[in-house]
Length: 640
Ligand code: CMP
Image (cartoon, rainbow, N blue to C red; front, side, top):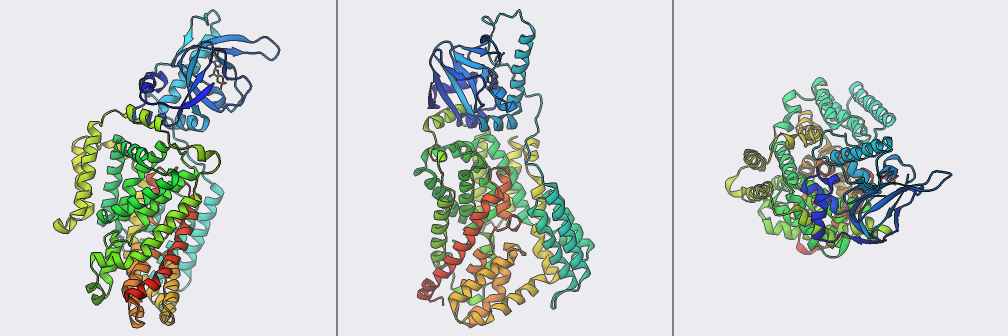
């Protein structure tokens, strides 16, 4: 029995003829092809043996097979025959019991082999497959009840199930009720605590309650105690009922163009992904990427940094790339939840979401920070001088993070051998066929979107409206429809709107100025030694970002610290860059809407928060080192 990786075009036709896969669309079939192996079997050889543990599922491609069952005390007998298109080996995988029979080739033959984990994942995700397997099993049972059936005549082929009739619920990770309840109890205690105690000096009672509700949200989010959308509504209710902010302020995040941008780009991304375009692009990247896992990490990170200035909204960028990432990981043959899948996700997050200070237009927050710098600092800064002044940090941070991700998530042991398969790629591309109408329209929409963003300085239309209009145009063509809307994670959309309201709520309650005062008092005496000043401000930013959103924390701390720095001869640009980069951590998932956009945009199953935590810590360490190491270069540039 010899295993080879899926060869190209000749098998595209074979696969489309397997009845078990008849209900799958071409994109799903192409994705599945990445994981199939062709196994050649000599006449007389067994593919599965009775009593063995089940490790894979098979479909006959060529030749004839016999199914043999040996009773505990007796002779083995041939109970059935299998021909091209017939599936076997599913029973041990579905029941977790040993193989119920031996399946032996009776002529030289070939089978498609799908590894156990992939098979179970496929059955969970594709209801048609489960239905087709059920039909196969029923047919076998029926034959067992009709002993007269002549097995030598009745060669079983695959069932003919072409339309999905039932929808199996996707497997959900089990909730942890005990931890969830504990999280809710802690949250309630924190809210009560801040409601019943008096505020620290300088903070209004409303501000104290605002801080309390946010701190209370931490255990709920961290322990996944309630769905995010519910938490978002509960937070809003707490702010309004607690007198922290009126409803118009508490919901102001939903009246922002960044929320419109997020929703529009989420729906557009879902439509573009469903069209198969992103998968086609992902296959193209895979076919052209060099250097294995390290090359893939570098390509994703650098690609993200280069796209940055064209699409200045970091969360928007991540939201758009997230569905493609899942498909890229699929095409590369990495399992969702594997170390490499997590590594590629972290490379994407860093390139598309975390390198926010490389160019002035790498993020809307960079523009915001620029806007609050003192007038004389702004006069000295153009788009190019910003990039030049930020370059020492950008280069060290990018280099450090790429190396760390390659090291932390590198393939190990057996996974090392699992490299992209060139034969499988050819087969996948053949199965996709020429670009469909939906793909062509999706490509046009994506180009229009990016062009609209890039030309914003001329037409001055905000990215949110550009995305909404593009979405409208795509809906007219039918590429976006009700099904697309249903595929969006609305729970996250609700949370995003509420988080986007945070800065207005905090501003209203006076939390922002109180926090800025506390921070500037703490660093006042340190400005004489620039490297210590930079290090302390960085660590302070890490702490503040646990409570305040990056988009609010960075400009706020810049306003507070720019005068302190300027008085000590440090350019306020340095403060702006430090706050911009250091307030953008993702140590805890709830902290960063960019991180959450990646997590949910990839379906929540590509990587776990635990896998991401180590990259988050590395981001913290690399940020601290990169900023401190830039001090001598900034001195040479005359910024200190
Ligand atoms: P599994 O038990 O995993 O391994 C042996 C396989 O043989 C089994 O799954 C079925 O796919 C197949 N099989 C078992 N009994 C029969 C039968 N009576 N007719 C056809 N196929 C069978």
